[in-house]
Image 1 (spheres, rainbow, N blue to C red):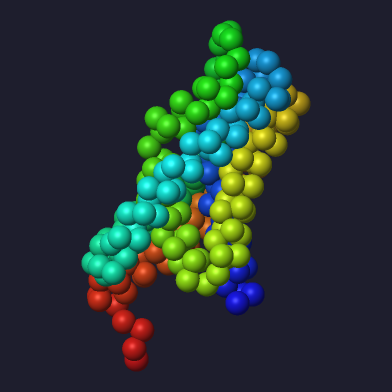
Image 2 (image 1 turned 90 degrees about the horizontal axis):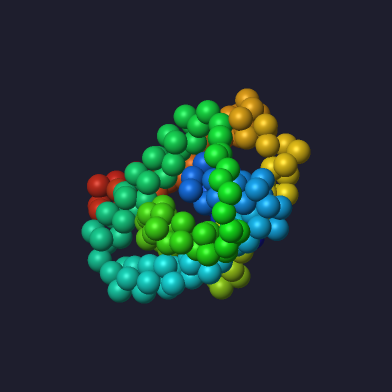
Length: 213
């Protein structure tokens, strides 16, 4: 039980942290708002997923719960999740750093973050192919495991961006440094491991791989 709980904690943290620190539209707006105004405006953008991801999670879990008895569908979702995680791993490995162009405009930070998140396909792909399947698997263990995964995911996702917003002034050059590249490559390796696990789960569900000797 403790080992399973730890595995969901780690999964949430890895997925959340990799999403939180990776280049993307939301991260760009976080940095731009923090540089142009102050870190609080950047933090407002960072918390946008707390407002937008809830409905996506509900729809994803509802759909997967309906098709959960169909092994072929579950297998295909797992394989799609493996493909998406592999893509994220590839993108992370090839990250060279970030450069953000700052423009003068009214803050409207939270609105910008919400709109960017709703129009970004990544949250939908993540929750439907990766996040919600993990939540359903955690539900087979305990509600504590579900809470652990969701909590650590959002701590990693939102917390990382808030920290970036706070530090972007004095440490903005870090986002273009070799240290940032090394972090992204470490996360790339972790994401690839999870992609492999999802791939194996998909093959099991499709009956193409068995655990019998």
